[in-house]
Length: 65
Image (cartoon, rainbow, N blue to C red; front, side):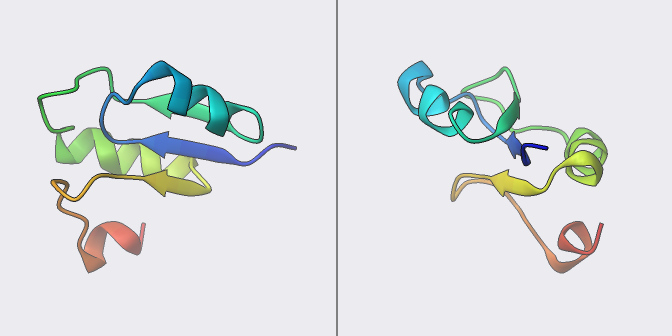
């Protein structure tokens, strides 16, 4: 079974493609808008890994999910 990765912002397709070689990827569709907290929580529950940008707020509560 391949690991599941959630990406919190839209990234360039060629970078996403590199991750998809090894992982199943779900990605927030917006490049300029932050993913809503409730969406992050829902997606992280199912993910093995998180690919986020410096602009995202990833706190201890979110990491414990």
